[in-house]
Image (cartoon, one colour):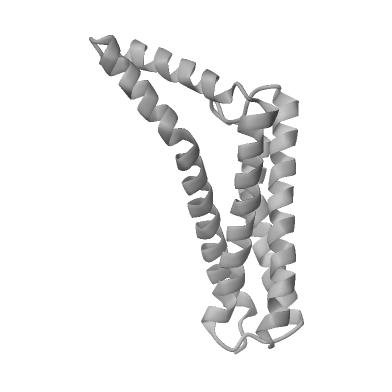
Length: 171
């Protein structure tokens, strides 16, 4: 299989996965009328957000199997990782747009919720310590969201590719 042409469908499926994940997030946002980055997620759309990359990795591998052969296990894993990474990349771009443009008060709400939770815990006697803890949480919010998105989507792509490889690999 020519690797140049084999990556093009992988890129397409990865971007489709990312856009479907963003569409799912937008539906969740408008259906619940709450900020999805603040609070807990408990709905069908949250589960769907995990299933979208899994389904697209399987579709990608089945498509590639129909249009060529896999000579090694690595050739099966690579598309899964690429789809997972592209899904994460599109989702990260959406997250940045959401936090800074769609709901620009997300960080302020996040800070307020953290402050209330930390006060309720009763761990802080000094206001300065409380402010430092809140600032630390604020500083970790976006990098944590970005790293988690990359890690979870790469993990989903990897595991799904391994499981799918059992069924589509040449014998």
